[in-house]
Every structure is written in C-alpha cells, then in structure tokens.
Image (cartoon, rainbow, N blue to C red; front, top):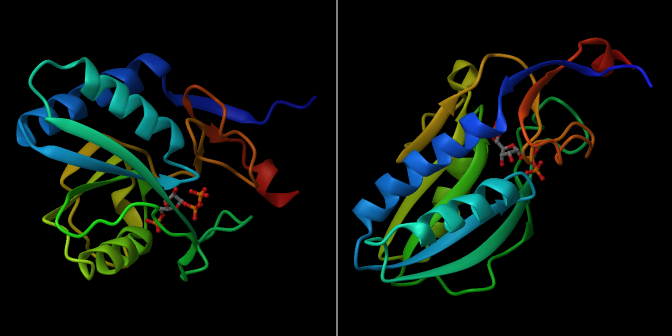
Length: 185
Ligand code: PRP
C-alpha cells in the first residue's frame, strides 16, 4: 500500500504530556466543584477519554466528574469546512445550573466552538468553559475564547488522535500530516 503519512507532528508522549498539563489546570480551577465534561464527537473522543482519565488521577480536582457527549459536524467528508455546523446528536444530560467543560480535539476557523458556545450558553449552565487539544490559529473566521489550550498545530491538514480525513486515520495514536497527493485522489 502506498504511504499516505507525510510526517508525525506530535508523538503519543507529547500528546499525553499536553493532556496532563491541561488536566492539572482544570483540576485546580474546579477543585471541590462538580464538573460535567462534554466531549464533541467524533473528533474529541480520544482527548475526552484521556483528559478525564488524567483528571481522575489527580488528588485535588473536581468533587465529581460526569461525562457526556454531543455530536456535531461541519467538515463532512471534505478537508474544507462547509461553514455550516450541523447538530447530529444533542447532549443526554441537562446542563442548566452545571459547570460545563466543552472538550474539542481541534479549533481551526472557530465556527464549531462558536456554535456550541451559543447553543449551550442559552441553556443557562452555571459556567461554560472550553478545552481544545490542538489549536490552529491561522484561519479563524470568528474569534472565540478558549480557556484551556494544549498544543499549537502547524498550518497543514492534520489527522490522527481522533482527527480524520474521510473517516480514516482517527485511530492513529499520534498527530500526523498527510501527503498532499491524498487530497487530489
Ligand atoms: C472537526 C473537529 C472540530 C471542528 C473544528 O469536526 O472535531 O469539532 O472540526 O473546526 P472549526 O474550528 O474549523 O469549526 P468535524 O466537523 O470534522 O467532525 P468530526 O469531529 O466528526 O470529525
């Protein structure tokens, strides 16, 4: 089979270290308070699970951690955002009066996180913050606040650790750049 990965950008160890740093900040900020962690599928599956695991290992974190997921999509099968965020599955839990932490794998043009902030803030949570593992700050269409940021990714199309190209590569344990011929096929 023809090689499709151009190069690895962040190793599993670098990703784990970034998640540990995020978990420490989050544990400090929510110490003694209940927290609802809301993972944004599909991309944030891996980071949400690993972040919650890291949080649970820390002694002085939130008093209680609950986990929920929301499913949105804007990229479909393309490497370009459609510019329109679609809600595919809403939360299972009610978020009113709760401390909600939205967990995203990546922020690029910012539309997904902006959509989620506006959707969720209208439901009157006690607090609403966001945590993003990979930041691509180069092509924001909207400026949206991110409370916890892990790693800055280069300005290339990235896959792995939850991120896909046409639903492939999510399972890679590292973040990678694809070879450019993949997009022209
Ligand atoms: C990806 C990613 C983020 C969003 C970020 O989701 O998981 O949710 O794009 O990009 P933006 O800042 O440019 O809006 P995608 O729509 O590809 O769905 P997926 O999570 O199922 O892969």
